Length: 139
Image 1 (cartoon, rainbow, N blue to C red):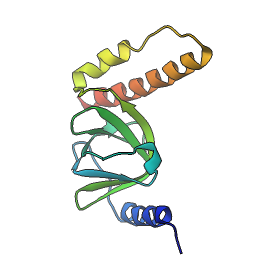
Image 2 (image 1 turned 60 degrees about the vertical axis):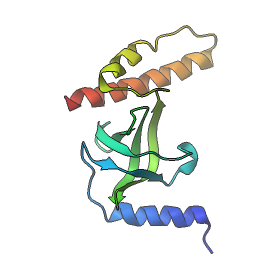
Image 3 (image 1 turned 90 degrees about the vertical axis):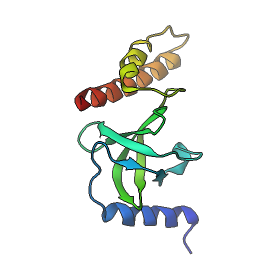
Image 4 (image 1 turned 45 degrees about the horizontal axis):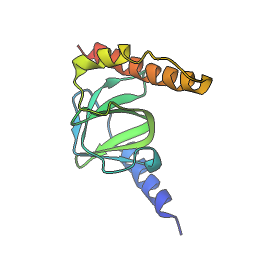
């Protein structure tokens, strides 16, 4: 007998294998990811807002608070977005519009108390830069 996690992953694989590609502007009423532990809680709807690299679409929640990318496979069925693995996940903590992303990116310069603090801030800055580049290509 397969565990619930493997059944869910197989269902998502089947949806992703039979779906076409998502394009900028596609909207989804819910998000279903195989790697549930990385994006837990109720999944609000999402909108595709571009690509990060060649094979990693970028999405944001309907309120614009959370930006995330999906890699290794994605698809759509019945108005829902299905994905295998989460790429980046950035929670702005408040609803964000496209114009404020660059401001948020510039504000992420800080002082560090430790080397691990520096690494954390550097990685967050990279995520913001990738989001900003994808949003800049959109206009």
